[in-house]
Image (tube, rainbow, N blue to C red; front, side, top):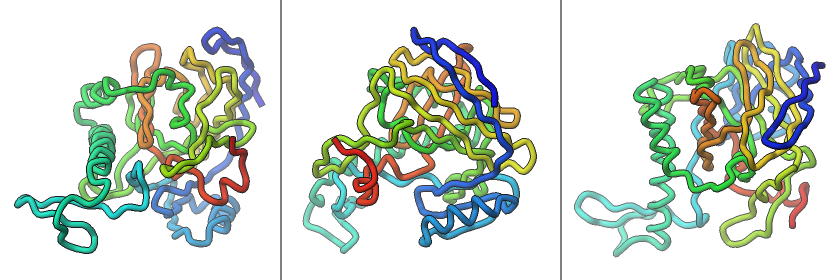
Length: 295
């Protein structure tokens, strides 16, 4: 165990770095768990926690599918229009746009924009320009307190260096492989706001609230992991979390966060780019509502 003291915004705090030799996996949005075959205990524990998971083994990495679209208004059939102007949904032709079509269309645009930038990162094509395009769209006033940064993330870029890759070309729906994933959570457990017809979601963080940040690795060799507790601060200043293998981690400097991606900037302007690796952004499940605090 290693102790260090850092300044996060205007708050002086202590970060506890718990470095251990540990290899793990994740449960991605499509319910497919992939895991290093050298970690049988965690592998079996995660598999047993959800018997519906399709478990696939890989040699030395965590592998996941891209996140699914978060429909703002759930439960409606997805509609579309062909080149001739005819309307359809999953049941076939329609006389006009399906109910809630225009909201669905906006959801699809947001999703496609995020996935387009993720593809640019994975292909290392015009990354700076594509990332800036998303950053200019940011509407979150205090991103370091946003509920959307909670959950599990797969790092695609750290310090502008790509550490992820596709098993197949991105247009073929291939998986994304990363050496580890990062979990950001409230230290005292999830807290949800009042539910409505859109769902029940995590509350925004309060300034000064404690966060727990940890990594789970898929690396076969240099796979030390980080476990840190920090204080959420609206100042959004970067905080050093330690290293996983050769990767130096930070939290803060968030310039964009959505359901699907999170972008951080280092003090020198280098980019950290993360892709969503869980389903927490879709809202609380019935199990979550019974387990965690609802306001």
